[in-house]
Structures are given as C-alpha cells and as structure tokens.
Image 1: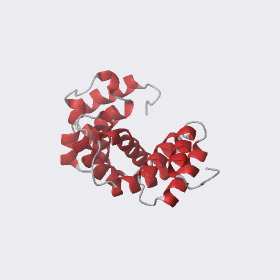
Image 2: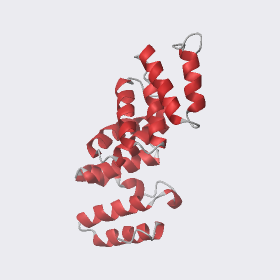
Image 3: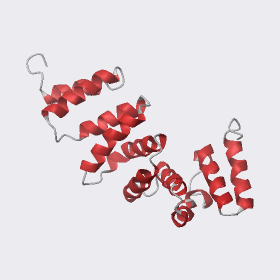
Length: 186
C-alpha cells in the first residue's frame, strides 16, 4: 500500500485483518476498494457484516440493501449475510422489506430458522393474515428442536393466535414464551 495505495488485493487483506480487530479501519479499507472498483458489491456485504456486529443496524441495512439489489444470482454463501440483513431490518422495524426479502431468501435456504422466523414476524406485523397462517407452521409443526425457538417466536405466535380468537393456542404459546424467558413477563 505504500507503493500503490489503490492496490485492491492489499486493501482486501487489510480489511480482512482489521474486520474483527478494528472494524472502523476495515470499513475505511472497504470504502477505498469501492472507490477504486465501484462495481465491487462484495464490499457492501462486508461492510454490512461489520455494521451488524457493531449493532449499527441502520448502516447495516443500507449496505446490505445495496449488496442484495446488485446481486442477481443467489449464492449459498450469502445465508449468514441474508440472516444478518433480515435481523437488521427487524431492528429498524422495516417489516415490508423483511417480507419481500425473506421470500427471496427462503428460495435460497428453505429450511433456515432465522429466515422463517423473520418471514412470520413480518407477516404478523404487516397484517397479512393468510401468509401468517402459513408462515407460523415453523412453530405449529415443530419444524425445529424446541431449544432453537426463542421468546419472540412464542410471543408472536401467542399474539397472532390471540388476534385469531384462538385463545387456547394463544395461552399455550404465551406460556412457552415465559418458559423461554421469564424476565419478559409483560
């Protein structure tokens, strides 16, 4: 980099090295790569990953949105980035986008718990009852081990069942939610 400050392989190596040590330096390196190679969208994914780990969800959403809009071909290596993107969208309460992207990502990973979870949450938040009746099946059909479900899975299921006037099921899911995390008794 002392000889050629725009040498992309060295910038990539620096970004990789600093990603977990000093994320702000890694972001700076990725920005420099983007300046040299504007069509290099992998830098957007890398920056999204960094911002996600820093809990800077708004910035993560921005980077992931750029990455996934530019990406025309689905790739199984994007599963973690897709999960992080959906979780960032959830943290910023962008439920319509979660619904749209989760459908795209389910085609890529049809048995992914995080993607199914985000799809269900988005369907509930967007009042898409028919879709929610389908997407809740990851819980109602016990598609995953009980230990993989979290408080929010059961709380959303309880809220949805309550809205559908299925009070017995709502109570069951609320009890499971409290069992998962009794600190959230509200």
